[in-house]
Length: 99
Image (cartoon, rainbow, N blue to C red; front, side, top):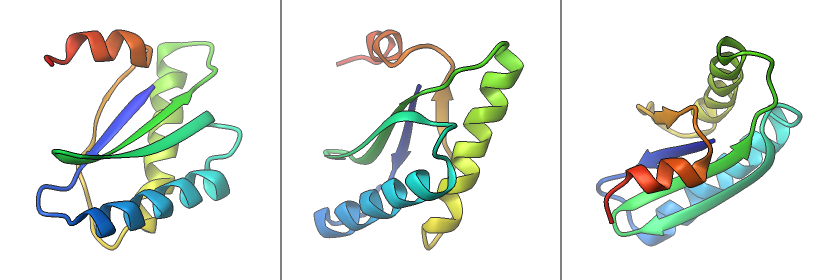
């Protein structure tokens, strides 16, 4: 899975701080749901990418688990956000995004 959180007017320092908060939230509240989580900051445009694996028996369960991950992240940040997610592997998702 790949979640992208965009922060349009965010400094590098803020982005790094937010990435640390996201990693901590996932580690503490979504451990066992989001497997192999990697959180990274992209500076142009300011974005945090959260890559993880979800094990599930159905698409419904995948969506539920992604919602649990988002639910773990949102309270860790000092604001609300909208997320764009895909239920395809990150490699396939990246192929859909223009370079």
